[in-house]
Length: 275
Image (cartoon, rainbow, N blue to C red):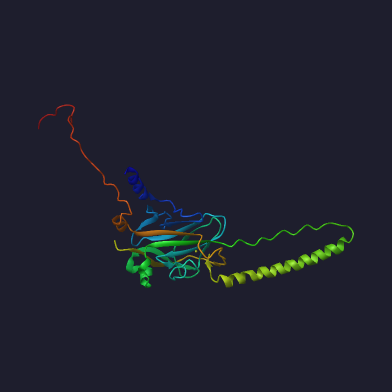
C-alpha cells in the first residue's frame, strides 16, 4: 500500500527543467523571459498549466551532432503551413547542438503570429474549424540521410622515365573527373528538391492557443532529405488551465497551511498583576 502511494505521489512531481523526451531533441514551453513552464508528469504524459492571455514560445534544443528536422504542431495544426498536422509536412531544421525558440504561427519568412493561451472559442484551431485536438503540442523529429562517402584519390607514383607524360595524363583525367563531380553536385540539390519539395524551413473550459500579434521573426529555407518516412521520435506536451488540471487530478494542489495552537500548561513565568 505504501509503495503505491509513493508511486502516485511521484507522478505528480512538478519540474521546471526542459522535457527530455528522447535522444534527439528537447522540447520545453517557455514564457517571454525564457523561463520554462513547470511540468507535471502524470501517467506517462507531461502537462503544463497555462493562463489565458499568457504568451509562450517553444524552445527546441538539438541534442545530437547532426542536423535534424522538427515538424511542429500546436492543437493539431502545423505551425508553419497552418494545415491539419501530419509528420510528413514541413518543419524546422536544427543544426548540430542548435537551440531555437519558435514564437508563433509562421506567416512568412519574416514574420510569425505569437502563440498565447486563450479560451477554446478564440483558439486558432477553433477559429479555422478544427477544435477537436486543442490542448497538445507535438514535435515529430527526423534524422537526415548521411552524405555519401567519397574515397580519397590514390597517391601518384613517381618515375623519372616518362614522368611528364604520366603526370599530364593524370592531370587531364583528374580534371575531367572533377568537372563531372561538380556537375553531379550541381544536379543533386535539384533532385533532392523534387523528392522533398518545400520540406523544411530554417523555425475549466479547455485552453487553446491563439493567433496573436505579428512580430519580426526571420527564417530561411533549406533542403533536408529524411532518413526515414517515419519519425525517429515524437514528443508531446499537453496543456490546460490550472483549475482544469487540478480538477482532473493531474496537477497537484498546494498543501494547505496547517496551524494548530496547543494550549500551554504554563503560559507565563510569573503571575501578572490583576487588572
